[in-house]
Structures are given as C-alpha cells and as structure tokens.
Length: 257
Image 1 (cartoon, rainbow, N blue to C red):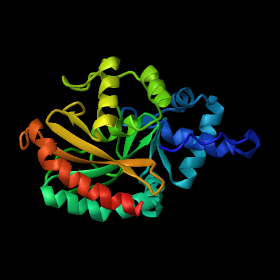
Image 2: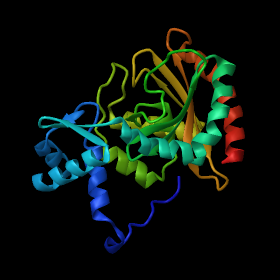
Image 3: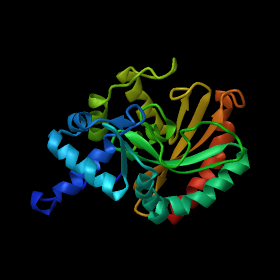
Image 4: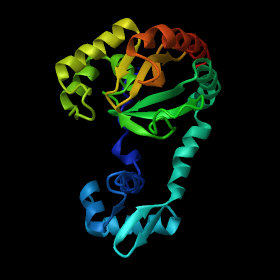
C-alpha cells in the first residue's frame, strides 16, 4: 500500500466544504433521518451551523426534510457515481470480474480500504444471489471480510498494529473473529499465503476468498474476491476451485493497473 499522504496546510483547506461533507456522512443505515440537534451532535457543529448546512444541502437537492427530520435524497448518489464512472480501477476491473464470475458461476467483487472499512467498487454475479453487500458503494467492516483482511495484511506493520489497537470487533455472526490476537494471526497468515479466506464472519452462509491487486509500482491498491453460498461449496473446496481462477484474473489486472 502507498504511504500516507502528507496533511495539507490549514490555509489550503476549505472548511465549509469539509463540514458540508461531514453533514452528509452523518446519515447512515441506522440513522437515515436526523434532527438538527442530532446532526450537530454527530458532526461537532453548533446547532446554528448544522441548520445552515442542512438548509443549504436541501436547497441544492441533496437533502429533504419532513417537519423536524432531515434525510438524504437520491441526488447524493451522484457523488459516488462520479467516482465509479471516472476512476480507472472500476472501469478496468469490471469486464474481468464478469469473466471471473461466469467462469465459476459465482459472484466476484473488487474492494478498497477506506479507513477501517471495505468499500466495494466493482462487482459481478453469474446469476447467483449471494449477498446484498456485493454491490458497488456498499461499505462493510474490513476485519471480517476476505477483501478487507487481505488489504489489511498488506499495510505496513505499524499501520496494522494501529488498526488492531483501535479496532472494536463485533460478534456479527457466531463465526466472527473478535479476539484481536487471533485476528492479528489471521492477517499475518493472509500476507504469508497470498490470499484470505473468510468463512461466514460477515453473514451466515457467505464464504469468500480474496487476493490483492497491485499497480505497476507493485503497490497493493485493491483486493478481488469470489463469494459463494456455504450450501453450494464447502470451505475445503474454496482454495482448490476458486483460487486458480482468482490468480489468473489477478495477473491480468495487475498488468493493467
């Protein structure tokens, strides 16, 4: 993974843009509608400032309100679509993902790290409904996904240690690893073997195996996985059936990135 970028000088930052984006990010799956006071609490803004940002975003079409509750509108999707349509990685990966998915009759996806979360940027399915998380734009915890774990495995050791120190793993399923020592061992093992296999830690019935994707400088920039339903493929067959196909597409993508 590339080194952390240097922080810009404060004079070069547009504070109003930063705070406006914080207001948008305050809304999530658990709290899709918020009051002015709740937005202020989540962003650290004063209530007066939160009100101004919400009114501005409503005027621009990114927000709507019903009485005292504000919610995002579909217009916010334009921000994500701008990335998906302009970024090189999704455009290059998508055709090869289709080929990978249909060669195995399963689902495939490419994801990148965003802080401690994995964001799906491209996905393909061979008609198999595996998981709703395998869609561009979805965000899931990195520690309990194959794509996330292989990306964590290729961070510099000090960044892996920092991640483990701040991580608060939750018992999402009965199989989710929440012991940090075991998680550290799994991350190290993924780096050594070159792939990560996660069995039903994010969703019951969901098994995934992932490999890293590197650019022309040899930097890990993303991860690619195959996801299967546990009822269709036993864990012991994942490496035998899926890994060779993953590696074949991995080599092609690495040459293009």
